Image 1: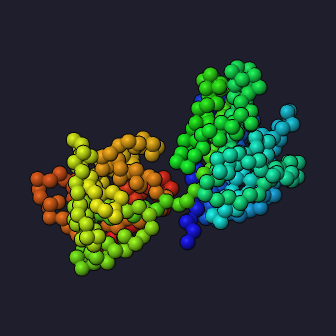
Image 2: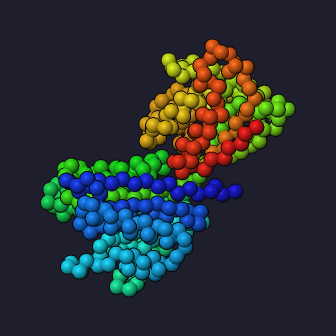
Image 3: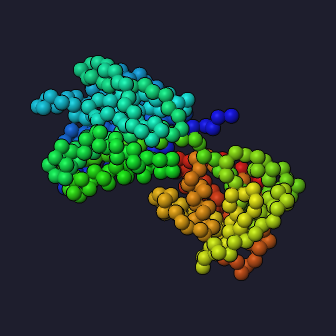
Length: 385
């Protein structure tokens, strides 16, 4: 059975030197089980450019999400954002990129640099066809994609980086293509690639960007699944059935709590071995259980994980951390689709008045984590037993 495809997105911006607002805008939406990315570069810079670019991306994204054909999208943009009467050029450019769940990808560009398409780590030139819609000449391309493919779209601030400074003629498309081939690999995130591109352009501008610069990245890869179980069910007779179903689900297996570990150990006919080397002043140690990817202590670790998820910006901040809360947060952030099994049997230890009050709020902590993950675009299924 083929593994479902997932489309990961990333974006980064830097404003023209001296401007607070970026004159580029990038919007991401969902369509037909896939993703839609729209990039626009507003005429000029500053507040006016930002407003024009944001209007363009917002209108285009909403119309494309509703399934309107390109002609109607372009007509709406043309009517809403007419040409500059003095300079006779469009108020804003756009790149529309739609990748559907079945791998069909569609690209439409107006006055933006050509999009970079990477397959097996190398940039492949897309076959464009010109299409006249009203007064606009639109470049279109159709391609079929699969895991391992990337799209990278940039505003012209990226292409022009270094002009008159470190690079007389700017970074240019070909140089960026070669640079991307040295950066893109299976384990790097779309967000990291976008940030690397913009940082590199900023360096070429010597930290004084001559134009607004934006990079938007789509990474197509296999979908990642994770399954998390904490607490035994209220009815002890359901222990085995729920644990067995948990084990049969695709993806990584993560459990928290001594009681939960005991149930799984019994099903797997294995022993839990505590790893004291992972203990910190604040976080209890993790454990090893053959057949399970991560075993942590219960409520305290989950509460600490919740705090991490509230404050972390990028999963790479967790690199090298071995404590249970950080590893649990990594599992959640690494996955795209997460099944959570929350058992509500009362743990007698949590009734001890000497225990911290927070230890009695397992359900609230788990629900908070569910909300935080959904805010990050994760698919989360919560089962309460």
